[in-house]
Image 1 (spheres, rainbow over the protein chains, first blue to last red):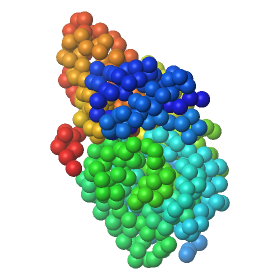
Image 2 (image 1 turned 180 degrees about the horizontal axis):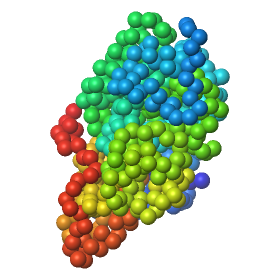
Image 3 (image 1 turned 180 degrees about the vertical axis):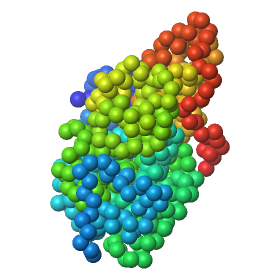
Image 4 (image 1 turned 90 degrees about the vertical axis):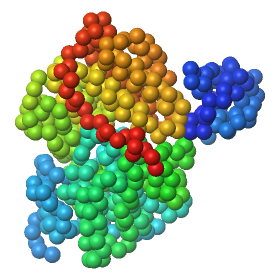
Length: 68
Length: 434
């Protein structure tokens, strides 16, 4: 029931910050766009996820609430 | 009104009935004398629940390609606050498909009736029928049909207008269509919001394909049981198919869903050459080996067993003299060019895949492992399903044309004689300029 990371692909410009801030769940493809690991985000990792979302320079990363 | 019994066709044709002559049912008089009056009036602000239940009972799935239950889309719009609006998608960006335009030209009033049925179901006072800019015949027919209705003041509670959108493959995607009609580029937007939440001018929008609208016009007249008398229990009704390639009489056919492919081919006068494979479902569809086509029934359930679906029901019979890989490479390049250019994985991935396929078509197979990786990288990584659809088609080509793939990459030979079968509009890159 954890939150899910979602990318707004229209906004994403492959800055790659998200993968640096949250390597536990985000890697980059060969063009620099994020590949999201759909594994649940534990409470421990939640803060990393939130930081990656907040730091995206084009606000392309979202955390979708489990129930929303 | 006269007492003429109107056609209540128990068999086919339904949608294509009365279209034997070039003008078909283009005039309102001919339309009404053939199909009868619609007898449905939209009440703005008051969804017609009785009609909704009839449509729910009919089990009609959207005919634009996704087969999404119409009643559920209607429910979603009715559940929203605000004045809803109806958008009928009569664009035909899929190069091997002609069904919506054939329908629109021959039976514009059936499509307009369907827009009124949609408006009645959600309680809308406005409906738009969208056609692409280059489809001038369709504009003219629709303009005339709408003017004819205005002059009779038949459906004055629903304002129906013609919406013109840019040409292109992606503009037919419902969010791209709305974006274009709202004055933006004809490109998909990020979801949510979805059209049922915020569509035309921010209003909850019911988007249905032109053929779906025409089906609704007949369901409103004849009822759910009538509709379900054709087709399969899970996929009821008739549907339009565009059949092209190596058949004697290519064209648009109306079939009950679940019809055997052989019967459709027979209706088209049979094959005109030996066929190696069928492209089923258009450019987001899949290739099917001719050997697997034996006994195949044209339903989503049957095609799912082969990893495919009916999509918008464009079917192309590929003659044995063509090269399936070269055909797919051309389509892959077209789909890459037609990307809206908004999402990185689609822009880079489809271009890379098309390039790899072009090299394979020329006999250089070194890109094959890369192509397989790229196919995995584009799926689910775009604002719309464009990369997903393209990847599905290309993956099926690598599977179905596996022998040809070996011939190309190992023997450096091609079985094709250079004939191009699948249509690819030339000016894709030029048309994308908005």
